[in-house]
Image 1 (spheres, rainbow, N blue to C red):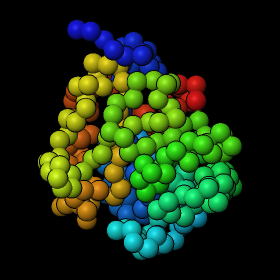
Image 2 (image 1 turned 60 degrees about the vertical axis):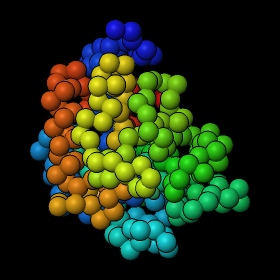
Image 3 (image 1 turned 30 degrees about the vertical axis):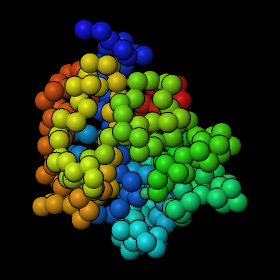
Image 4 (image 1 turned 120 degrees about the vertical axis):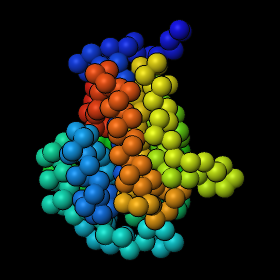
Length: 252
Ligand SMILES: [Zn+2]
C-alpha cells in the first residue's frame, strides 16, 4: 500500500507509528466529574483550550450556547498539568470576530496572562469561535511566539508542516443540518494509522447520557467508545500524547 506520510511509520516518540491527542475547548469545570476520571482510567493525557480572561469564573460569552458554564480554575489547571494535561490559549474573551484593534490583546496578551496565572508554558493558540478568526490568529502568532495553532479543520495531521494549521476531528453525537450523521468511534483512525499521522480530537464537555449540544459534543459513553477504539486499533503502535508534547517533538 502506498504511504503518503511525511513521517515514516515508527517515526514518532518511542517508535510509535501514529499519534492520538484530544482537546477540550473552553476548559469547563464539568470535565472534572466524569471526563478526567475516564482519562485516568484509560491512560489518556488531555488538553484544554482556555479563555484566558475567564479562568475559574462562569463563562461570559453572550450568545454562546455554553454561556454561564463554570471554567476550570487555576488550582484545577495546575493539578491537571501535574498529571500530564496541557493548556492552550483560546483568546482572552472569545469574541465572535477578532478585530485588528483587539488582536494583540486576544492573541498575544492572552498567552502572557495564562502563563502568568499558571506558571508553565502555553505554546499553542486555539482559534476561537470559527475559522473566520484563523487569518488574524496566524498573523499575530509570531508576535506571541506560538509554536502551533489548533483549528477546526477536520483532517489528520502529518507532521511539522501542519503545525500552524493543526486539524482537529470533531467528536459529536450528530452533525448539524444538512450533514446529519451519527457518532463514529472509528473516525479517521485507519487513515491515521496507515499514514503515520496525528489525530487531534476535539469536543467541549461530554456528559453521561447525552450531550447538551449534539453538534458540539459526544456523550461520555461515546467518548469512552472512542478511547476504546483508539486502544483496540492502536495497540502498541499509537502514541497517546498531550498536544504540547507532540508540538515540541515536531520541533515547534
Ligand atoms: Zn470556543
